[in-house]
Length: 337
Length: 297
Image: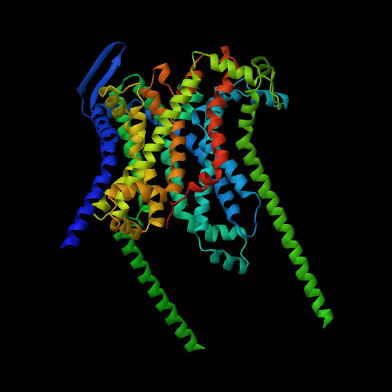
C-alpha cells in the first residue's frame, strides 16, 4: 500500500518539472502560431497612415498570394540558391567523411581540418554576409586581386549569377563542416567488418563506397538532405544583409523569409499570415519525411517504439525465413553432391 | 626451388611497392582537396583581419597580404562612432545570448529529467510532441510573436528574446540522450532513501552529472543566440537596445562608400572574432558536440 502511494507521488514531479517548458511553449510559441494562422484569414494592412482592416476575408489572402506571381518567384530563388550550395556541400562532405573515416588512408591532422572546415558554421551569418559584401564589392579586395591577375573586373553584386553564387558559396562554406561531421558519425556506425570483408575480396574503394557506404548511409543522407532543405527554406540572414533586403538584382535573390520580413515591416499582416501558413505546411510535410526516416526507432523511454518493434519483428522473421531457405538450398545442394 | 620462390617474392614486393605508391598518391590528393577547402574557410577571415588593421586610404589603394598599422586607430574610431554603438551592442548581445544559454540548458535539463526519471501518464505522447515541435521554424510564428510582444508591452525589451529559450526542444533532445547514457536510476533512488527532495536531487546530483552535455549545449545556444538576427530585428529598434547583428545590418543599410572602410572591417571583426576565439579554445568539445547523442540507430 505504502509503496504504491510513493510511486504516485513521484509521478506528480514529472508533471511539475514539465511546467516551465510548456508554460513558455504555450505563451511564446503556440499562441503566436495560432494567432499567425488566425491573421491569415483577415484583410489587414496599412497604406501610408491609413489602417485597412482587420476584416475577415476567408481565403482571399491565399488566393492573392498564389496568383500575384511573386511567391513562385521567391520560392524559385530560394530553391536555386539552396541547391547551388547544397550540391557541392554534399559532394565534399561525403568525400571528406569517407576520407576521415578510412582506416587505410590514415590521414594526419584530421582534427585540424575538421576544426577549420567547421568554423564558418559558428560565424554570425549577418557579419559574414557583410564581410562578403565588402570583399566582393566593385572596389573590394577580390576585384582588386582579379584585376591584378589580369582576369578583369566582375560586378558580383550586380549580376544574377554573381549574387546567387555568393549566397550559395557562403551557405556551402557554412554548412560543409557540419554535414561532414554528421556523415562521419553515420559512417562510423557502419560495421567495420563489412569494409574489411569487401577489401579482402579485392573491391576497389570506389565499389566499396557505392556498394556498402552509400546504401547503409541512406537514412543519414536523407536526414541531411531534408533538414538542409528545411533550413534552406528559412534562408534569410545572408541574402538579406548581402542585398540590403532588396534581393537585388531585380529581386532575383529574394527569399521566402525575406518576403515575409518585408510584409512584417510594412505591417501587411494578412499576407504575412498567409505566407507563414504556407511555410508551415511545407516545412511540416518535409519534417514528416524526416520523421519516418529517423525517429521511428526511438521513443521517450529509450526503448523501441511499437512501430519499430513491429518492424524489427518482421525483419527477424524475414531473416529466419531466409536462413531456412538457404539451409534448405544447402541441404539440396549437398544432396546433389 | 629458390628460382621458383624469388620471382614470386619479387612480384609481391613490386605489388606492395605499387600499393604504397597508390596510397601515397591518394593521400596527396586528399591533402590537396583538404588544403583548398581549409584555405577557402580561412582566407576571407584573413583578409578581414588584415583590413581591420589598415587605414581607409590604404584599403582603397588595393589589397595587401601584410597587416597595416591602423588597428588601434580603427578601433578607436569605431568606439567613438555614435551612430553605431558597438560597445552597447556587445553588452546587449552578451546579455541576450548569456541569458538564453543559461535558461535554455537549465530548463531543458529539467524537462529531460522529468521525462527520464518519472513514470507518468502521457509521457510517451509528451516526448513525441516535443520532438514534433522541434522542427517548427521560429519564422512561421513570427507574426503572432511580434503582435504578442507588442500587446504585452515588451517591445525593446530583452525578455521576449531570452525567456523563450526555456522551451528549446533541440537542447532538450541532446541532454535527454546524454541522460539516458549516463544517469542510472539507482543513484536517484539512493538519494531518495537519504531523504533528499526531488528538486534537490535534480539540482545537486543530476545537474553536476550532466555537466559535459550542458556545457556543449550552452555553447551552441549562446552562439545561435549571439548570431540571431531575424527576431531581434523585429523587436529591438531603440539604439541602446540593439544587438550586434542589428548594428551590422544598420551598417549595411547606411551609405556604404561614405564610410571609413577600416572602421567597417573593424566592426565586422568585432562581431566575428569573439566567437572565433572561443571556438579555437573549445573546438574539441564543439566539434565533438555536433553529433553527441544524436544519430542513435
